[in-house]
Image (cartoon, rainbow, N blue to C red):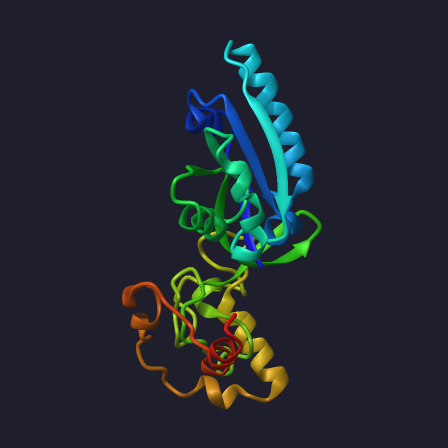
Length: 229
């Protein structure tokens, strides 16, 4: 899932500036799960904005809405008729949803209320850890299902560095060495032979160095063309 956290209230107030009518828009998927931008968080932040702006002498009118996903037109199109009533939209979606709002409604300013951090997994209640950097060239079949790009501090492809000691990364005693995890699981699975094959330098052109990425499912495109949707 995409993981993010709300921006500090001071920063949000600075972003909103002199806006008087604000639509605070939440998202019902990833940011809801990580308690950054769901309906509950929208309600709390809206109250904070109203109180803070009143105390500072320029009370804001803050309305609230939460859609299922801000990254898909079908869920945000119903907002179109409302947007003309607001100075700005403050989105609590991830960066994808915020860009989606700005792209779909170019004449409306949509500001970010969340810092998008990583693709992660819930380790326990209230704690998420990075597991994927969406590099576009997945090697999990080689590394026993554990990603060294996201979980090794140096993104090493052929084993641990010299700073790894007793299964712990040198950057932090609370961070396990990704390659120790990989080796231990490969031994359990009987796939150590895959680790002994030297991996070529990573093809970063499939990641950000190659520009914005796009996935096209030709079968779905064909269905779309046939139905006219």
